Amino acid sequence: MLRLMRNCISLAVPLALLPIAGATRAADPTWLDEVVTPPAEIRAEKVGRVEPLLETSDGKPIRTVAEWEKRRKELRAEWMKFLGPMPEPRPEVKLEELRAADTDDFTRRLVRYEGEPGIMVEGWLLRPKKSEFAQDGKLPAICGLHATTELSIDQIAGIGGNPTRQLAPKLAERGFVVFCPRNYLWQSVESYNQAVAAHAKRHPNTLGMHKMLYDAVRGVDVLASLDDVDAKRIGTIGHSLGAKEVLYLLAFDERVKAGCSSEGGILFRSTNWDAEWYLGQRIRDESFPLNHHQVLALCAPRPLLVLGGEQGGGSADGNRSWALIRPAQEVYALHGQPVRLGLFNHGKGHDVPPEAYSRMEDWLVEYVAK
Image (cartoon, rainbow, N blue to C red; front, side):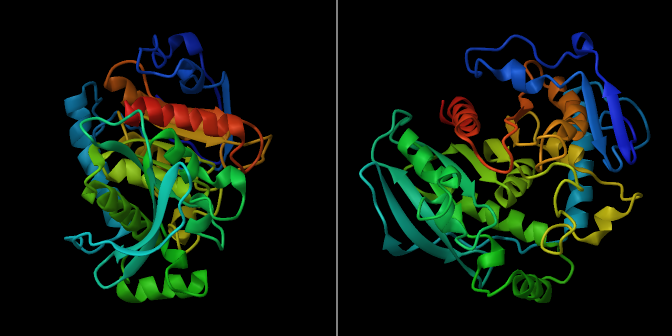
């Protein structure tokens, strides 16, 4: 079991002793074993505290799912306390259509709705004109979370920007309903600082990351409210900033069946997790007791694919991400084989090259659509 680590980790992992891969099943991608098997050596610096997951708060071993469930509730409560409160109950979903930008393969509507009480949010809603995944007239759906770009939701929805990051049109063409909500850093503000200040004024005891999580949950609320969406087949996808949201959304919203997190940076020091619009400066303290292996474990047993572009010390995710993925896999293993938490490192930097998108689409088809 991976225990407390500080500053640097270098683990020789005897693969034959790790019961994490197992024989793939008919409902798994053929390449599952490849992405769930850690490298022989895991190297990472400044990992932070990695407390054992399969121990109770008083140090007793956890050997069953029932025992883990008790610990899971404790960890979830600890994280919610750290993130701070957001308004409950959430408002009823009432969509207002603002404009359309259709294609031959899907409809695309810009809609507006109430996010948190009194705060209006926009998002692009894409619906396929045909889908092989229809079941009783209902379709699978994806909450698509956009990257850091001044285009915000327009890029992920296919209206300008980097084509490799236009994820929603590809998924709509594949047969998914896709909803792309606007992140709060672009909700009727002129700068990140203005967004952070406005959020802090409304919720002085709540971190920006919980605002992002709340807005992503509202995105799932939108999808679940649609007559043509199967609320039991909702997944999530995101790149960069959106990948960070995927991690939290899958962990804290159990309606979400599976997720793909591209280049979000699992380690606190991988990217700017300490920014005020995410988790703040407290996470830089070496004594800080929480870490993202716990959030990964909260996703179990729902499938999560992390995608990295790391070359050497390069991008946000890569070999070093295994330092937190590997311990979370132990929790997945409690639920039976095969483990469906892994990493695909395409090694092509902070982007979504075709081979990375292909893996994500396969993942969502197998674990959400079918």
